[in-house]
Amino acid sequence: MIRYAPLALCLLAAPAAAEMYKWTDENGKIHYTDQPPPAAARKSETIKAPKIPQAAPPPAAAPADASGKPPAATGPKSVSDQEMEFRKRRLQQAEAEAKAQKDAQAAEEKKRNCQRSMEQVQAYERGGRVSRYGPNGEQIFLNDQEIQAELVNARKAADSWCK
Image 1 (cartoon, rainbow, N blue to C red):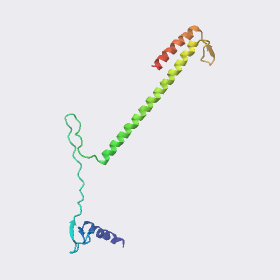
Image 2 (image 1 turned 180 degrees about the horizontal axis):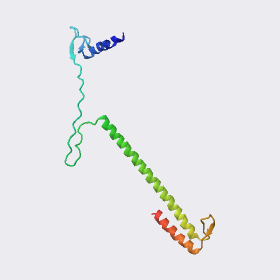
Image 3 (image 1 turned 45 degrees about the vertical axis):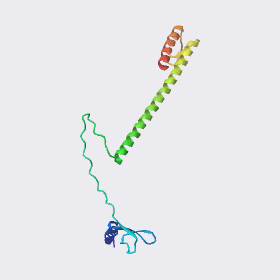
C-alpha cells in the first residue's frame, strides 16, 4: 500500500499541468474545467498554465568605480539584504539610545556635583566652626587660615562642576 503512494501523488499532480478551459453557457454562467467545453457553449477559451520562473543565478560582482565604492543596486533588495539593513538600523538605534542615556546620566551627575560643591562653598562662607575627620577618625577643627584655603578649593570645584 505504501509503495503506491508515490504513484498516486504523480497521478494527482498530472492534472495541474493540463490545459484549463473557460467557457460561458447559454445562461451566461462562466465555467472553468479541465475538459473541453460542450458544443453548445457561447464563448470558450483555453487557459494555459503559467510558467514557473527558474531561479536566476546570482549576479556577478560588479567592479568598483574610481572611488573604490561598488555601484548602487538597481533592482529591489532581497529579503536577506532587507533583514541585514533592518538589523543595522536597529543596532544603530540601540547605540544612539545607549549614548543618550549615558549623556543624561552624566548630565545628572554633573548637576548633583555642582549642587554639592555650591552647598560646600555656602557652608564655608557662613562661618562658624568647621571640622573634618582625621586619619584615625578623630574630629579636627579648622582654624581661620585652613577654612579660607578650603573655601578657595571649594570655589574651584564649584566652578569646574557648574560650567
